[in-house]
Amino acid sequence: MKIYLALTVASLKMYFRNKQALFWALFFPLLIMIIFGMMNFEKYASPNVGIYDAANNDASKALILALGGTSDEELLSVTTGTLDELHHELEFGSSRAVIEIPSNYVIPGEFAEIKVTYDERFQQERAVVSTILEQVTDAAFKEAAQVPDEYRVENSIGVSETFITGQGQGFQAWLVPGVAAMAIMQTGLFTVVFTLVRFKSQGVLRRLKATPIGAAHFLAGQLTTKAIVVVVQTYVLVIVGAIVLGVSVGGGRIGVWLDLTILALLGGALFIAIGLAVSGWAKNEETAAPIANIITMPMLFLSGVFFPLSVMPDWLTRWSQYLPLTYLADGMRAITVEGASIITLGDELIGLGVWIVISFIVATRLFKWE
Amino acid sequence: MTNAIDPVIVAKDLRKKYGDIAAVNGISFEVRRGEVFGMLGPNGAGKTTTVEILEGMRDADSGEAIINGINVKDDPTAVKAMIGVQLQQNAFFDNLKLSEIVDLYAKLYLAKVDPVEVLSRVGLDNRKNAKYAELSGGQKQRLSVAVALVNDPVVLFLDEPTTGLDPQARRQLWELVRKIQAGGSTIVLTTHYMEEAEELCDRIAVVENGEIIALDTPDALIDQLLSTGFKPEKRVREATLDDVFLNLTGRDLRD
Image 1 (cartoon, rainbow over the protein chains, first blue to last red):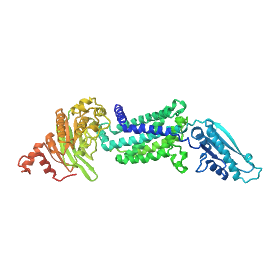
Image 2: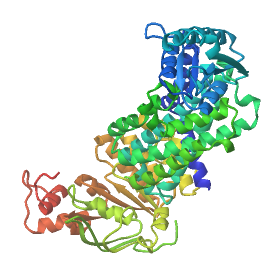
Image 3: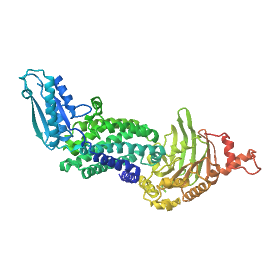
């Protein structure tokens, strides 16, 4: 125990004196978060709406296409999906309306009621969406329906409106937990890989092997350090996100910090295990760097760190939803800004758990002391 | 120092193969308490492997290594706890001060030492706040000796401690070795510098192809060579240990 403490203290000292490691673990993610957070991507964009198409016929498809506008002039930024997904996105995400096309759209002689749900906090967007919807349905109906005069537009299509009070906080709230997850990945993978590979190639681990403690103690001390760094990092990023970017964290719930700690440690364990596997595999720093980059770079863009997965093509998200960082980023986001607690997380915990087990098995297979 | 068992090191018919190559091929010797025992030999002769078996860093295929009465194979941890080791390639943590490195290693042995005092024994107390990377080659070697001393070892193993050092740094390290010996330590030293062996060692084992081909005091080895009628090449004067070495192991450049 005394030996373990001595090793942990020494390795903490080494870590916090390593300016480069601190830069990548703290300042780099902070910088990214603040710079991206200050850009307002929503300002010039058309409102995000989710459309649920119960009719799924030519007329409804034409309607969705028309609502999206042309490539020259985008009217609405349309996402499709299940009603649950779309409503969740409206409540917590960046969506501003959910449009539900009924199954009887457009059957001559029947009255089709399009239900629209808005976030009452965004009246400007509501006005835009309802105007566009009105114009488009009007035009679409006239074009599509070659019907006798008695089937007038107003007799065939109606729009009903409902309001909810969403809790979504816009792009900043998406970004902050995403960057926190990214930082956990970078710390876990890069600092573990670089310290261990360097110690291995320089012979530091070998020298430790000549002492009565063996290198496993040393490893335990190193991993404890990384776990502490991961938690500190998460706190710093989330707190700066709250202060500088005005993100409301966990709706003021105190338990959110405990949940974040647990999730950060889980994420840390996962990426540290991946780091151990890579450092077992790589012979020196020259081979370690590209391997670590090949693992992290795609996840930076495919795991919804900076932008929702919904902006990417379906064939890609079908795979990227299973990436380790996706689970971590989703979990961080659910806890930080979507009011979830760690026990209510389902998929994210299972996903992380499976990846942790896989990574540890691979790590124990690949890791070597010399 | 712990209870005195003499000889402090017993190696009995040690053997170790890497693939088809026998790195250590039946090496036996004893080291007496308080002596500086030298192992000489060209690169790849098996010195380092032999020493690593004694240090508990490598398992022998067969044979026995006994340090201070403890069989290394049975309890490598106990052996590691009472020896001091300087490896051929030493590296220590960046971002730690020298005093912190010594302190950390002392804690690994659960030894209570004053790091600055240990550093002063190798003449590095004035650099206690320096980092490892800032040291010169000779200072790095002296630090690794200091680290090897934290547990007040029964036997100190020095594996090629002066390789790559300039003559001044080398002499400084010799001084240090003599000082440590004067303090009552037993030292096992590998080297391929003959003048170093002649200068420091009480007895020398010459290792070639994994076997000991000669073992005696430096003086006796030189006398033996002269008694065969050997004449040094250049000038007619007494032979040096260099002659002994080259005569025994051949002149071919290794490695």
